[in-house]
Image 1: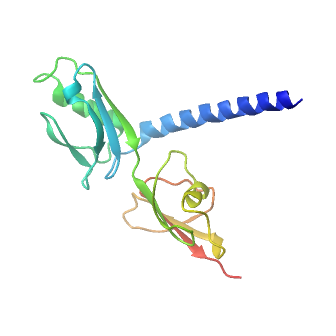
Image 2: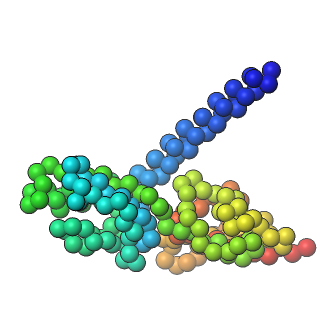
Image 3: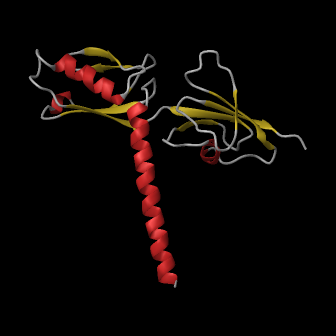
Length: 181
C-alpha cells in the first residue's frame, strides 16, 4: 500500500507541475512589459543581435543594436518580437527569426503587518497568500480581513479589498492592516 501512495503522490506532483507551466505560458502571452522587467532576445543565426539579459529602464525601454532605443512599455513579448522583426527586416536581415522571453518579472510590494515588508519578485499565478509567505508571513497582529491591493495599472491608485486568495500582479502594492482584538 505505501508504494501505491507514493505513485499517486508522484502523479499528483506531475499534474500540478504541468498545469502551472500551462498557466505560466498563458500569463506570458498576455503579460504587458514595463519598467524593471528583464527579457531575453534571440535572433536565430545572429549572435550579435541576441541579448541574454536586458532590464527595461524607467520608461520601459532598452537600447538595441542598429535600431537604437526600443520602447517596450505595455507590449506583450510577441508584440515586441514583431516590432524587432519589422525593424531588422530589409536593411539588416532578409527574414529575421526573433524570439523574446521574459526572464524576470518586475517586483510587487507588500507593506504593513508582515515580517519583512518590501519588494519581491513576481511569479505567475501568485496569490496574496504566497506573497505574504515570501515576506516572512503575517505578524501576530495582522488582520486577515483588512487587506488591500493597489494595482500597478490603476492611475487613480484606489485600494481594492483583498483576501488571501486574491491574485497578485507585478508592480502591485499590497497593504496588510493591523487587526483589532
